[in-house]
Image 1 (cartoon, rainbow, N blue to C red):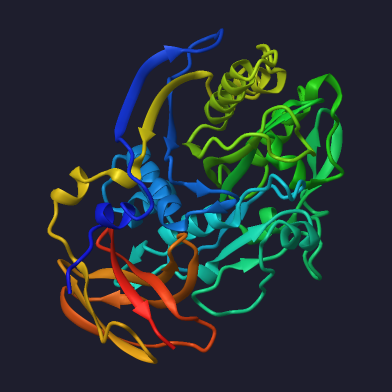
Image 2 (image 1 turned 90 degrees about the vertical axis):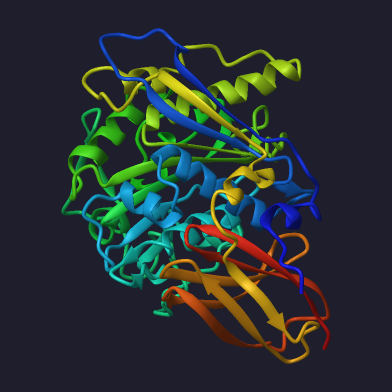
Amino acid sequence: MKNISRRDFLKFLGAGTLGIVAKHGVPFAPTTGTRQTSDVIQCYDENATSGGIVNNTVAQIMVDESIKTLTGISDVGEAWKSIFPGITQNSTITIKVNCINSNVPTRPELVDCIINGLALMDFGGQNYQKNNVIIWDRTNYELTSSGYTRYTGSDPNTPRCFGTNESGVGYDGSCPLIVTGNTTYPSRIMSILSDYLINVGVLKNHGTSQVTLSLKNHYGSVNPVPSHSGYCSPAIPSLNQQIRDVITPNDMQRIFIIDTLWASVVNGPSGNPDWNPKKILMSLDTVACDYRGWQVINEERQGSGYSPINWPVYHIQTAAQSPYNLGSTDINLIEINNPSNISELKNKIPVYGIVSVNPNPVHTQAVIAVSLMKSSQVLIDLVDTAGRIVTMIYSGYKTSGNHTIQYRLNGTISTGTYYMRCHCNGSTTVQKVAIIR
């Protein structure tokens, strides 16, 4: 059978053009004092969504290329591992999402792509288990209404997912945070269960805070919610400073991602999405990430005939200044365009991964042949033609060389065309398969 490369596979979804553009040291706002320029990755792919559906395969490529570009490390697992100094196989990574508006939430599909990358982290031949990840927000209802599946079990390949209102969780009365003179209490998920935290916000305009991005995402992390007066300034900067400096371990929040697959640039914060940017933003600097998010909102507002949200966005400006010093509005914007069409990266290494699927078409079971250029974590899943994950086939560690993996279909998979997708050695290969029941 012919092996299908990532580029060949994506021809089924439509081709685009590739561009990686770094804009160095461009000051986008007034600054005070001396602050370093911060990198912000902006990744766009025209195939990221179709209608109201996320193309999981393309979204995975977007997340993988973004983290590799941000860190300068070509292996996805090692790139993620570099974000979390001191991490061990048993460390807990929590992902704070934003589900207050189920019409414009942090998309579960994007979070799955992040977790797939985390699962490629290698610890002495053992992969990082997805069950060490906790996806969370304020309530179980908000999570499930936004498409997440509540999970509190122990399957190593399934992340946990629950809200602060989960029985036995709640808010941490032993860890008061003083926000502009008032006391609030953090979710115990953040103060007790987290070793590291990934902040995955959304892109929305907001009548009170001007915008909802990564900084404001933490209004869902504490109770009572801090003040909205003064455009949430200085309450949002004060809250984020307290999270950074008070909660143990200090500075556990390592990376900031803004889900910009869909957005509300006019209808926010509680309306339906009114734009489909097909982007993600990623940075190690929450201020820089939010500053770019504000720019993205304004680009669409002005292009659609709406007045811009003028600078300053008070809580972003204040967050960059003393005494908070949460980041910089001096950004180095690095744009990745249509990474699903990247072929240059594939040409630098031999094509390893799935070699064959036998038999094909598959009736009840198949043998998957896999070849590895070096010992690696291996993840194999089955996706449909829209890029949606149907099932996880295999997750484990394999040594370099050739291997076979037995796969038996479950009863819920119907007849049709699918793709087996293999993540290994820091890259992805895809094999087209037909299933006949």
